[in-house]
Every structure is written in structure tokens, then in C-alpha cells.
Length: 214
Ligand code: AMP
Image (cartoon, rainbow, N blue to C red; front, side):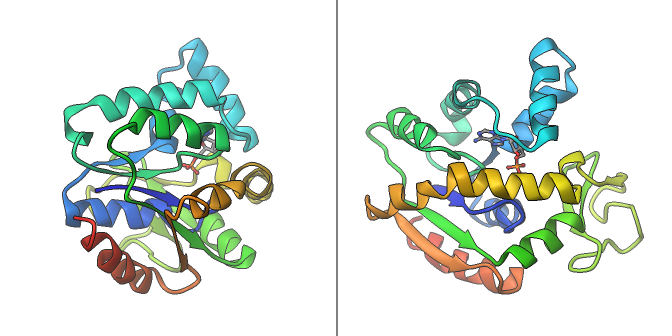
């Protein structure tokens, strides 16, 4: 099953993807996570990427596409994956079609939610430094404040989850990413879901849809 999750930052793509891959036993490929790993290396490329991400802008298409191309070649991704955060531009969508070539996507799931929901979700998000698990200070609080339930790691707020950067990311999304909805709709690949609903409701709907593609 080859699936992409589309939608604005904060809509819950990462949260849903992390649960879906446990259920379907396929890899979760998140360009945001892969870029954050590159940033940790503090190489010249990493420093440049960090600056772009902290501004809330998009990293150049060529760089992200190369990262995705290499990742999709790995053995664990050959029979299926959930791609989260890529593509984000029409150029990336075309590149992805080329990369997948004779084994195309089953579909693009578009999660949509109101601006108010997105800002509330992003500004309250906390992430585990060690295992990357996501929490939310009110919607999904950890059992013990600031500590990951899964591995005991320390929780932190992503530097691009500050309100001003969130607004910038939402603008970038509207300017550069929203056109992907037409891209996949015109190819009969788009399924739209209302992600203002609680995460558990969205999850159950996703299990039904993806289950048919297994
Ligand atoms: P995310 O974790 O998906 O919210 O991504 C965090 C940041 O990583 C974005 O705001 C971008 O700066 C960068 N990023 C992630 N995926 C892409 C992509 N496909 N194209 C360009 N930049 C990306």
C-alpha cells in the first residue's frame, strides 16, 4: 500500500501516520523527521536547512526529493509506505510520480481542519527528544508533565511550533501546497477527511480506507 497524507501543518498527519504504520506494519516516511535528523548533524547543509525550517519556509525541492528517492529505495519501503509531509509542491508531486513509476500511489488522503484547530494543535504540541512520540498539553497530555509515556524521554516544543512561525507555515501551505489537492483530485487519487473530528474518529476512518488497499 502506497499512501500519502496531505494537509496543513498541525492537522495530525504525523500522529495518524505513527499509529497507522504500527497497525499496517509498513514504514512511516516523514520528510520533516528526516530533515530534523539532518539538522542534528550540524553539517553545512544541516545549518542551512535549520535556518529555512526555523523561518517556516520550505526546503528546496531538489534536496527533499533526493532524500525521499533514497529512502524509497530501501528494502522496507518497496512494498508500501505512508508518506507524510511530501510532496509539498507540484514539482515534488511530479518527481514522486517519476520515482514510483510503474508502482503508483493507491491514494492521497487529504486531512482538512479549521485554522483555529491547527493553531491550537501546533502551539500545544510537545515531542519526545528520544523517540519522537507526539503529545499535546491538553488534547493528549503525557501521564507525567514533560516526560514521554513511551520511553521516559524529555518532551520539548519544536522551534517552528511558536505562534509566529506557525502562522508563517500556514501561509506557506496555502501558497505552495494547496494546489496539490487539485493535482491528486484530477488524477482520481484524492480522498478528503474532516480532521476537526477527534483523532480517534479520523483514525478509525483511515483504518477502513487503507484496509481496502492492503
Ligand atoms: P513537518 O514536520 O512536516 O511539519 O515539516 C517541518 C518543516 O520541514 C517544514 O516547515 C519545512 O521547512 C520542512 N519540510 C518538510 N517536508 C518538506 C517538503 N516536502 N518540502 C520542503 N520542505 C519540507
